[in-house]
Image 1 (spheres, one colour):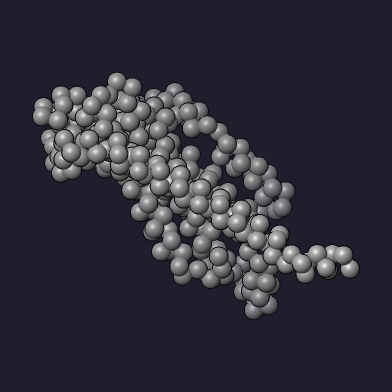
Image 2: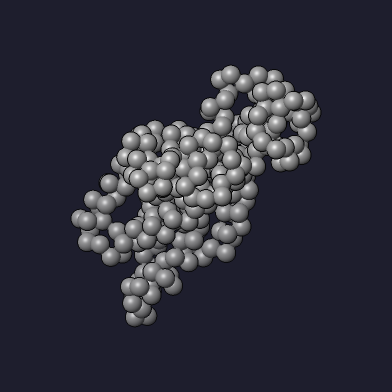
Length: 296
């Protein structure tokens, strides 16, 4: 009776408090993102004012230490290396990650699937510098035997693929785990085979979760710094072959921020702003893909 009277007197107290708390969390998160974007814009404004936007795409090379009048600020080779390494790594890791998650959830015996999940969790928790160290000590010498110098776009792609595969596999597995049992029961009632169920029911129903998995994997690949810095070769040049040394935008910031000054420093913030724009475009694309989902 007391509980009923309390709910009558304060019908919205608990729900309203939770709603305001969640709104506050959302506002704080959005504010942080906007502040980061504003910070990048402010720090990049010096380069936009002194150097100009077009020179970041039309200058002959990247040698910014001479100042706005004498230096060159071409970011295209590093942008191309970033996009190529990310796109190819995601293209390789996505079918491997989703396929392995499907095997663990729908084909493997339960003990094997459970053991697989633990191994993937372990791989996802390994620091990126450890992947980079493995790539530098093991992978680069192996590639150098086939095609010197070894540190190249190819090694960066391999390391990135191995790094983001556990992320995609874990999130894809979570999407499969949260699939309502009614979907599988309805498929079984219709007499669909396991393979047909996976292709025609599971994948369309978990499209939103799979898009999120690919989004987060791609975001990690775009933003990876240490591992790529250790295995890519760090030469600023247009990547015209898989075995050429390259430098990504993140590696460029890490290598040069310690001593950069004036226009050079501001140009490095332009690199960060470019990365932020890439992530925003990526989020928009993932949202567009997930619009046609059956189950969110």
